[in-house]
Length: 262
Image (cartoon, rainbow, N blue to C red; front, side, top):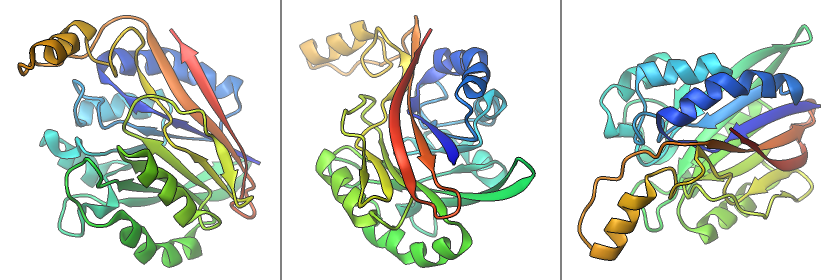
């Protein structure tokens, strides 16, 4: 049985420091074999840089996924070109980077292939290519490469996320929602095969609004005036899921929400 940890949206420096200090021991204690993390908010709350990506990989993450803030920093192009980081597949073939990655992990002396796919929703978000057709077009070839496929669906609308879960049920090992930073309580196994949750949550300061300073968010909502929303400071919580997957079939056996507080 393969144990995969998927970490919700990493928000800013406090979250990166937390992962550096706490994640290695957590991986050992929970006997985690492979780790994926969404890091589209990792660099100052928006996008990713080479420096911040290295910090996250050194903490124990194997693959980084991104989302709608991917290209907010130009340095992310270097990350996508040289590191194990992927952006939403449905940005299309002309955007820098890739939306799929397959890694070979040596576990107990054997090689295990694990693939990750990054998708982005379109409801209440910037217009991109259709995520359903984008993943359908690559799925047959990907399934020939790897039995274990984890999909990060970075989307706003719960209906769109639920639909993607059913669309990929029985075809991939897991469909895990990100973007809204609030964990949902609907983790389940679809069709006896695919682990699903609408949103994993975030890794960021707990006393905040989605990882941002609450005072600034309140000012924006109460005054209707644009306000710079800085990353909050304080105690961090890591919200994630652990998915147990049958290595020989790619079938998810269980999914469990976990949280680790500072």
